[in-house]
Amino acid sequence: MQTVDKTVLARKAVEIRKGALLAVYSGQSGHPGGSLSIADILCYLYFHELHVDPAQPKDPDRDRLVLSKGHCAPGLYAALALKGYFPWEQLKTFRCLNSTLQGHPNMNDTPGVDMSTGSLGQGISAACGMALSGKISKKPYRVYAILGDGELEEGEVWEAAMFAAQYKLDNLVACVDNNGLQIDGKITDVMSPLPIPEKFRAFGWHVIEIDAHDFDQIEAAYAEAKTVKGQPSMIVAHSVKGKGVSFMENQAGWHGMAPNDEQYAQAVQELDTALEKLGVQK
Image (cartoon, rainbow, N blue to C red; front, side, top):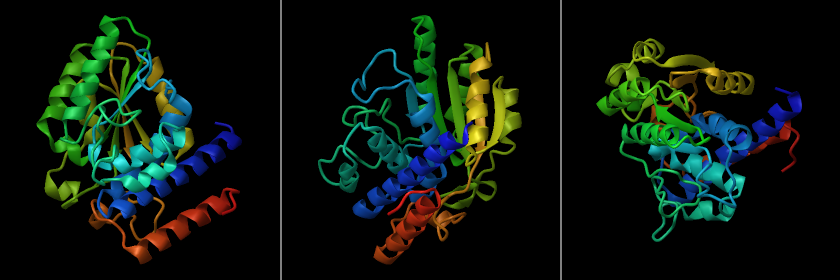
């Protein structure tokens, strides 16, 4: 990837992190840790990979993105706002009464949301259905999904994995946000889904492992997935929960907790400093 492209994406990823934190802080509830860990993936998808148009959010030939780990809606909403699906200021209404930005994505109310998610395991199943429909209808769109590693503890995920392999859904690319933490602590202490790559290979998927915060690796992985025929692809993205905010990184406690005034101010300052290093003056 060209240096200028990486710099542009890096800036947008920081903005997505700021937007996710703005939403959680404004609503005084939500899930910042996992929203921050998928910011680079979301940034790459919406600003480089997905064939989507905010002016036509229901275009039948658009690519689909299913946030199977629906509790990380703040990250998704920030990406959608930055892309132009709705005003940035709307992030401040997160989880407010009558807001279109609720704690989990709602495809009926929020422009750009392709599937209502939140019950873990169900999003990837819906993505499989979308992909199969696309193949049957001979549609050009591709389907993308993002799961959490804690979500892999749900049995429905593995039913979906079997389904995707059985029907050779090579228009489906899923990504596991492998940050190693869930609400109750380390995934290895709660109900270990390891080894993740080997399990998906055994289920018939093409598997690619990457650093979730390296845009060169992200680009290479999604490009490779497009070359795969007869198999769904799974990108195992090794990430840092709370990435970009020092006191949130690798801390399970920030899975589902809103920052107070002081913490929010510090987080914004750190992210603004990151933007300044990328050439953006605040």
